[in-house]
View 1: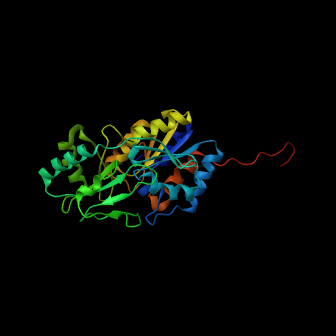
View 2: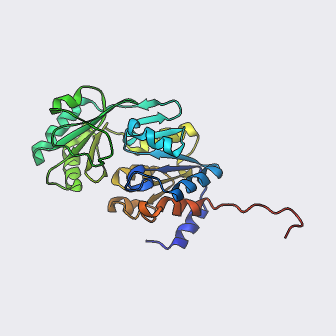
View 3: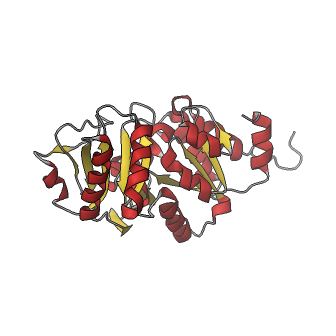
Length: 288
């Protein structure tokens, strides 16, 4: 890990107009709250003329209350890049769904290799539900979900992604097998503890971030991104500068430009306070 002075020297040569942040494990603390220091750092970002963009795996309905707490009325990238949400209008400007037949086929291929898995889905739309089949345990107990009686009920409405868990395999093991057998049926990613996901093929946080940045008129080299899991790797590849949290997955740390402190220790604020230093009031001529 480079010394803080090396990070400061590198970012001092860059101009950032967009701050892209993941939520869980990154901007959010473990109790689903934002620290006062993080909120103050985001306010400083706005004062400097830069935009803040949430880029998260959570679907739009699960992001809406968090954006309200942030006071955000702008854009947000949701559903691992499958949704571009306008918080002010409470509508999706863009969304792509995962073909449900392909999703079933992909799950079948995975189960042929590792045995039974438990599945959940995020329905498309600003009021879409999270449905979970018997045996699936939500990784975030605070997130609302509707339990269905059998897997077939997961496919009742269009979906943005599938979430998978295995009773014995680790997330890394399940994701590795899924990537090996799913092929072009879907994009496989891992977004948090107990969260291996299938999303539309070719859709990542990077595709959603690029779409949002284009609407905001910001180029990749003027974007700084923060994250903690392998699903943030495409976002780091796209952005001009990527910052991993101290609690991040080793795969993300390996490609990050910088590693900050953890989400519990205001890691985003630590960097933003350096990148966007508060300017001292100018003194009028003749004043000491």
